[in-house]
Image (cartoon, rainbow, N blue to C red; front, side):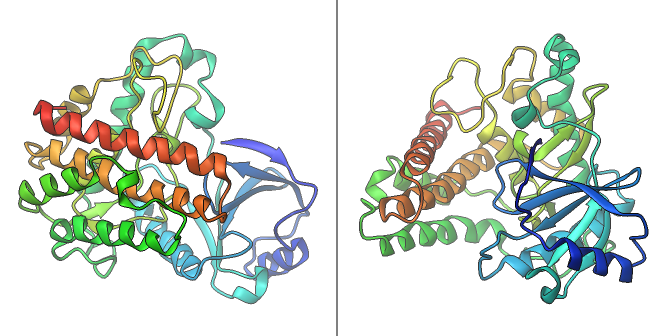
Length: 353
């Protein structure tokens, strides 16, 4: 993640310092506040206390109705992962008292790593295609390991609604799409070519759901950090959409967002140099080596990820049509939504990834 200086902090430093004192975390002065940027709607602030570096995560300054609960859930998941082999930020303390900073927040250890999209590839990774190949495989290894964890043993048995998870997906996201009609300036579902075709195919070809497991829920290149000294992951970040469900959707999400070097325009994510990174088929093969889950229907999960993400992105376009979001951002995300559905149709008609 990149770092920018903040002349006006979105937190009350004195209140934070008193809260840290109460938690036994203060002592030395708290200094060097920096805002971390990474495309998330939540706020992340890095700061120092002598030689120790912290990151504070909180909702936006104008929180959504569910923002505090989202923070609680994310902190709970990160705590539960502490003894797992899944790389993640280590939670230090959680503040449930909204009077301190105006919202629930938590403090975690800073990650010694880089985000390939936000920071770019450092010389070691940019110069070696074999390292880039292993970076992609490391991403697969993380979700394969996550999907094998037992939610009950981690104290997460009540997380989300895993029952009939796959059965609910198409209707749930179609309902969200139809809800955008509240923005009367939005042209409607017709603005998304193929959305009906893709939804119908998903319903007609839905596989049987496998064993319930943990999902990250928004797994792609923007939400991982790599080690500076090699291809391994330093941490998977942004766990706010974590839930119980079918973990194969994390792999589908990775495939749906995976850049294509021959399609520079309209892609959700872009990274250069791209040569060396695994192909979609290689990502799937790696998952099959690392997980006992049946991956024969992975094309369905990838198409579902395209469908769901396209509808999510279209929401910003609908708000932009009504003047509630920047027009340029709305137009860009609309183009990406259309591209995602085009990729889904390509996979449907081609019969493979």
